[in-house]
Image (cartoon, rainbow, N blue to C red; front, side, top):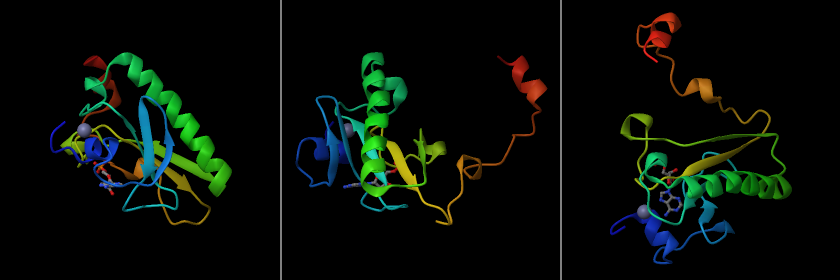
Length: 133
Ligand code: AMP
Ligand code: ZN
């Protein structure tokens, strides 16, 4: 997509530090790493978020998460990982091309976990929320 920084990376218009690539996905080191080996994994086609990606490519993307994690495991020997993505502005997404953050974790690296992203139940109990489904 015109103007998309990650599409430009896919097209070779912006350099990147690739750690994994196949026909459908590209994984490269985050330029502003929050951990040693912080990697972003993207589908090569432009999709703003998971809802915009076709289901077959979603499967490829998920399998690629494991491949990239294994590669990082072999090279950097982390003690753990956090894996996830920011979806939408409220979710903190800045680059509008779906990307999975793969964060290798090391003992005593000072980081938090998924629970540290947000802690606000919106004033609703679990019993109230389940009634909405
Ligand atoms: P998000 O807030 O989930 O949209 O994160 C976007 C991520 O893309 C950030 O962690 C940026 O550091 C990363 N990023 C932006 N431009 C580049 C680039 N040219 N190469 C590698 N990573 C990038
Ligand atoms: Zn794009």
